[in-house]
Amino acid sequence: MTQWLICIDDTDDIGTKGTGEIAQEIGQLLMDYCQQHGIVSSVSAVTRHQLFVHPDIPYTSHNSAMCFELVADIEQAIIYELAVAHLITESAAKADPGIAILNLSTPFDQQALIDFGLSAKQQVKTKQQAYELAQSQQLSLTEHGGTGQGVIGAIAGIGLRLFGNDGRVKGQVHFAGLDKKSDKQLTVADIIAKSMVDKVMDLEGAILTDDQVIDLSGKVKAVYHQHQYTLLVYRDEQKTWCNALKQHLKQY
Amino acid sequence: MTWFTLIDDKKLFNFGIDDYPQARDAAQSCLYFIEDDEDEQIDNVVRSCYNCAYRRWLINSFECKHQA
Image (cartoon, rainbow over all chains, first blue to last red; front, side):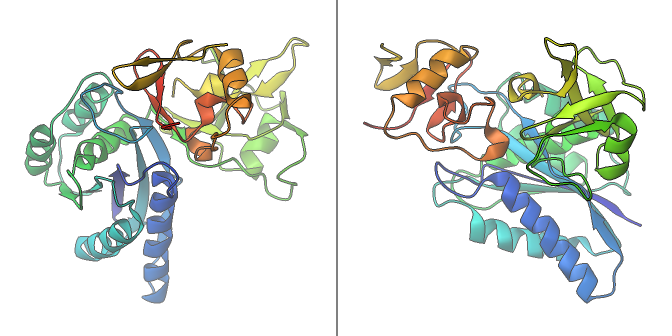
């Protein structure tokens, strides 16, 4: 099956629908299309990738790109048509949206894309640099309104997703069969069995064993670490393992 | 308490990017706080300038984009 990475950036403005939500909707639209045409498909969770904040970079309030993976034997033209139509419809009037689509089955220089993504977290990149990289890697990169600056974040987001050690996962982690709102205690094994989480890791990078118990409360969120959806945890004052606070997740 | 300083027509937060108590106090006193998209929030306490849709991150602090 063909694997695709799709990333969008710079679609929102203060008080409008978030870029992550638009990315999620594009994923659902592509799934719906595949289902209607009898094509087996799946989409991953959306990851959010923070880019450089600098006075020379125009953005609304976040400067973060949103990326997801689609697995489906589907023509790139169809992905492009559906995704772009939705992007244009849902982007804020003042936004500068861009979208990148990469077919992972075609040859490309993964390191070049990763390097671009990592540098976009630390320095100002230009549209010309983004387009030159896209052209050299046979990657679809297009802008759809405003200044089109979103193409920089869109291709950077692809690189950071390929890097596999960057970004928070959009939304909250849900646990099958359990109330979303109530606090709960689960073992690491249960967390992995009942949710999209692949592993549980402390703030220093140590992986917790299956039998360790985690207190889960508030909004439980995951990060993308070593290409895995990872639940970060910390020890509170009573030495109990707890899901990480938003303050802990900020660096991702 | 003066949480912001006006510099070049920009309303800049005086306490940087890691002073959560001040960001919460400032938001408590603000009439214009709007909760940003949940994925963009970085403070567990919702009503915090760090979670506001009007904050625009800078390298060392943020700018409040509300005009009032």
